[in-house]
Image 1: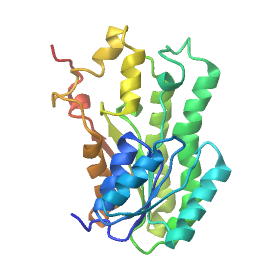
Image 2: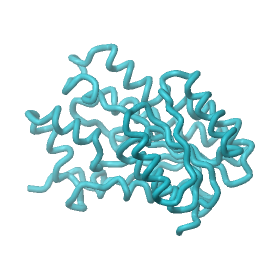
Image 3: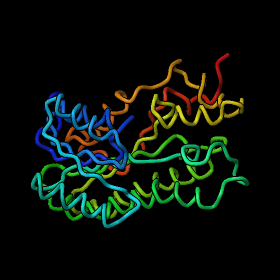
Image 4: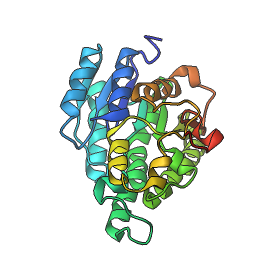
Length: 265
C-alpha cells in the first residue's frame, strides 16, 4: 500500500483542511508527489503535514472560481514536477458556510451562484485546465471528484449544495466518456457525514432545526460519524492503478445512510 501512488503527481484542490488535507497526507504516504492547493490560511499546515509524511510537495494558492488562477495552478504543477497524473477535485462549499441556514425560498441569489461557482464551475475549470496534462501522462492518469450523498438525495436547507453536487455526479460520467480514449479515468465519491469543518458549520447553522440535525446525527447504519482519513483511503484507491478498470463510477461512502434512510433513537 505504501507505494500505491509511487511517483504520481497529484493535485488536490481544497486541501487546506478536512478531506482534502487528509487525502494529501495519505497520498504522500503512498509515494505521491503532492500539489497542495487552497485559498485558506491553513494550506501551510497541510504542506508541513504532507512533508512530514515523507511527501515531495509544493503549495500553489488557487481560487477555483478564477480560471486564470486555475490554469496557473495546473501549469505550475506540471512545470515543477514534469506533469500531472491525478487531479482530486475536493474543493467545495455549502451555503451555510456563506449565509447561515436557508430554505430554497430564502436563499439569496448571490449565495446560490457562489455555491455553483465553487462546486461545479470550479470542477469544470480545474478539469479543463488539467486535461492536456493528464492526456500526456503515461502513469495511469485519473480524476477523482468529491460529490456528496447530497448529490443523490435532498437535505434540508441545502438546495444549492444538493443541486451542485448532483451536477458533479453527472459531470463525472460525462468527463469519463470524453477522456476515455486518451486513457484518463474519471470517478467520483459521495461522502455522508464526515468530521470536517463543513459539517461542523452546517450543524451549527442548523442547531435550531431538528429535521436538519436528524439528517446528520444517527442516520447511518455504522453508528458514528466518518473520519476524513477514511475518505482519503478511498480517494487513493480510485487514483491508483489498482482501480484501472473503474471509470465513470460513483462510490457512496456514507456509513450505510443511503441504504437505510432511517434514524437511530
